[in-house]
Amino acid sequence: MQLLEERIQQQGEIIGNDIVKVDMFLNHQIDVSLLNEIGKEFKRLFANENINKIVTIEASGIGIACIVAQYFDVPVVFAKKGMHRNVGNDIYAGEVFSFTKGITTQIGISRKYLGPDDHILIIDDFLANGGAVKGLCHIAEQAGATVEGVGICVEKGFQPGGKELRAMGLHVESLAVINSIENGIISFG
Amino acid sequence: MQLLEERIQQQGEIIGNDIVKVDMFLNHQIDVSLLNEIGKEFKRLFANENINKIVTIEASGIGIACIVAQYFDVPVVFAKKGMHRNVGNDIYAGEVFSFTKGITTQIGISRKYLGPDDHILIIDDFLANGGAVKGLCHIAEQAGATVEGVGICVEKGFQPGGKELRAMGLHVESLAVINSIENGIISFG
Image 1 (tube, rainbow over the protein chains, first blue to last red):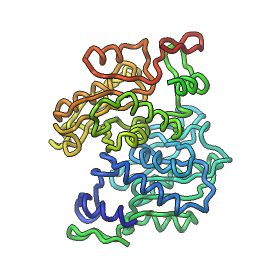
Image 2 (cartoon, rainbow over the protein chains, first blue to last red):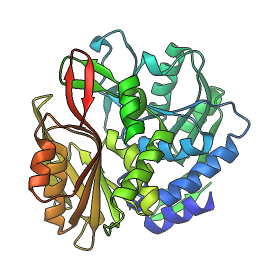
Image 3 (tube, rainbow over the protein chains, first blue to last red):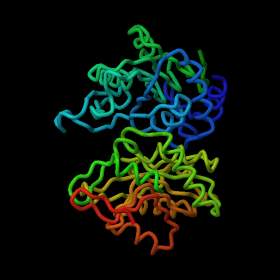
Image 4 (cartoon, rainbow over the protein chains, first blue to last red):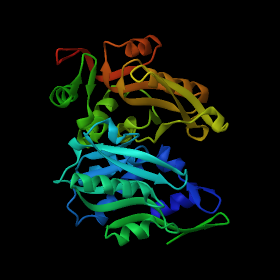
């Protein structure tokens, strides 16, 4: 998606050779008109999938998911962090391991809001090692829900998450794929 | 706002005499079409304010803020939790005390995304003791930004936050004000 790549080039903040922060327009300050263009593009890319729910994870996925959901005319459910299985039997629990932070976070979705009738599109801002998407897929599996697709704004193509998710047979669409960040220059795939 | 009151009556989950959970449509599962009606209503209520940014706090405020922002045609900035002042000098820091949980949470907004030219509308899902809004006002004050209004989905009228914020001179609009929850019956103001 050219518009998103341009914004990353113009406003992304590069840190070293593997981090680009998009705080300016995607996950701290949020350019809602850009999110609307992202929503239209995901609708085009997943037009053939039968989707009745958007699933994401707090916090930075929520805004994107809500705007995207308007183009599918479906509700959003977001996984909450810090929900342990021992909170009760009323949640589907998963884990997300963050390579960046070196920590595992517990996530959960109430059993009331995900079930065997659900055909979901998973939405997230970034895909690097795929920890968040795998955690959400594990929750979907417990619920008997079908993952119809995975829509990502920015994929780091030089990290293994995207490859692994596609090898699992998932329909993954990333609007901008970063192939490399070298000497302050971002190359897209 | 009659539509929101009806949804709270129909789908709110009452716990004791002071908690109503709206997980079904507002802050776990999200009914995006309801949020659009909420966005239109806030635009009507704050039509006379000169607003150039919506400010909220993660996580449950973000989805509401993004949909509302479409009606004002402005960006969203959300305060992040767990941001301490000692992360660096590049954030405005605040604190939110939760009476429900009995804990204080550090919040922060990057100095890059809030400043003296900003005229903000603060959006949040719930207002009870006003901790979140006061924390965001403290951040706005540091940034030199003007708080033009506070838009709340559900205010607990039997808790002091709304009264205190209005006494501070803030323009607070709550779409549903719960006066009491007694024996499983919610009364609106």
